[in-house]
Structure formats: C-alpha cells, structure tokens
Image (cartoon, rainbow, N blue to C red; front, top):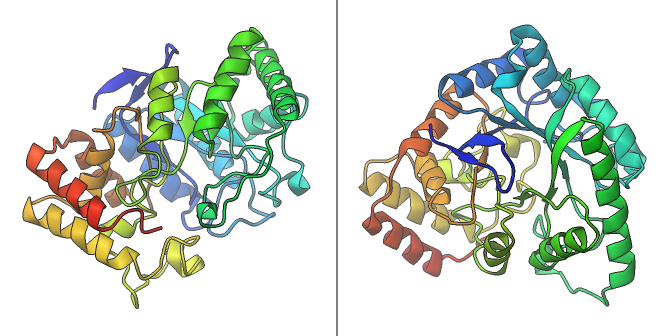
Length: 347
C-alpha cells in the first residue's frame, strides 16, 4: 500500500488508517489483535484510537479498554516501531471519561500519561483533541446549529494554553505531533494562525466525519485544509457500515453497531436508504464492493491523507485493503457525483 508524508511532519503513513473504537465492546482483545495483524500484513501502518473508546456503547467501566488492547498487541508483538500511533483526549461532552473534566494545557500532561500507560509505549505519534471546547455542529448537530457571538479572546486564550501544553509534551518526548477532531473551518484556520503568531506547534491533522454519504467537508473545510496544509484523516468513511448494504429499514444484523444504537447516532433516517441504494448500484454496475469503492472515492479527495475505517472482523479489513488498491474511472466518479446531487448529505 502506498504511503505518504503526513502533513508537515516526517511521519510516513499508509493511505488507510485502522480504526479501533469497537475493540473491548463488540470485539474481543483477540479479535482486535487479529485485525491489527491483518492490517499490517496488508501494508497499513497507521492506527487510531482514543481515550474514550470503546464506543457503541460508551460506558464508564470500559473507557480506555481499546487503548489497552492496542497496548497489549504492542507488548505481545514488539512491533511498536512498525506503526504510527494516534489517540485522542476526551472532551467534556464525553462525560464517561474523567467525569467530563475535558482538557487544558495542564490536564493533557496527565491524560497523556494515562494513554501511554494503557498503550504500553513511550511516545504517541499523534495526540488529538476529540471535540472542541465550544459549540460545534458535528455528529448531526448541524440540523439545529445556530452559533452565538464568538468570544475570540477566550477562545484564543484557550488555544494558547492548550498548544503550550502540547509543546511541553513534545519537548518531553511524550508526543510527536498533535491534531484536531470534529473542528470547523474557522476553528482550523484560527488554531493555525494563533500557533504561528505565538511560536507554538500548529495542528498536524484534522479528523472529522467524511464519507461518500456525508460530504459536508467538501467545501470550506477542504479548502482550509489545503490552504493551511492540515490534511483530513476522516473517520467513518464507510458511513458506520451503511454503505456496505448490511443494514435495511427492518434489517439489523446481530453484534453490529446498530444493534447497540438503533439510529447510528442519527445517521439512519428515511433519506438514507435511497442514497445507499444509489451508491451500491454504482458499485455493482462496475463490479466493485461498495465499501471498497467508498474508500477508493475518499482517496480521490485532495484534502484527504488517510481515511480511518473501522472493522468488526478480519474480513472487513481485507475489504478495506481492496479499496486502498482501487482506481476509480472518470465514469464512476461522475456517477458518484450525480448520486450526491440526487441524495445530498442524507444525514
């Protein structure tokens, strides 16, 4: 699998990233290890996790378990140097973690130590904020989003504080770079500007939801990513598995995310089914697996470095690997764009 330099860093990452958020809830430790082995055998070296994982559901008693599973794989195999490791610090809206404490320049000194212990490593390659500490429109919040007055002074003071904390972690050798998740275009450009004005480490990447079914990052955010040289490493590039066709209005396989959360956090609604049918029809017409096609499409987007796909089995990893090797024709890309015009952002 091809590798690229991640943003302005010297990190060389595979064009696909293995997501882990089901390990410890829907997947056992052994299954997580098997997915790691299959991904690395297929050329993937980029692995993403988070302090709050596993999800679906998030429970106080399982917080951190996914990092522990990644850590036990590192300890068992001794292959820490074979992976680029990313994790995330939880925000207050993820209240199962540290009683909703969130993060600051001082708090991340402690949360990093917790992640390092669970991951059984001395350094995290990419340490990300999971959500911003201000109102935002991600995870279906865009349908009711109505921003109020922006307190620029308070926001920029927070940014300086946090990036100062990240700088201390970099100087201590505990992290190599830091990044954003669930940010806005304005937020991204402000982080970069404030970093440069204050001689602080700028964000390396941004991890927002982006898929063939959910393309709100196509315009302003994509432009900001390219202008500021902060690439996307999007999560849910398969629409939480919706693009695979395994779900239907009355179809929910056992041991899936939807079996735990019936709407997949608001992604399932009457508009989504005809959109899924349209994309699956394109894939079938051209002899492709729809999940592989969706990943291959994400890799055509100029602002995207490495989509983060989740898997429930080794078979799912193998399908993702197919997507990493697919080249979509102009005809397929035109048909995907037409389907998007007919079924724009169904969730």
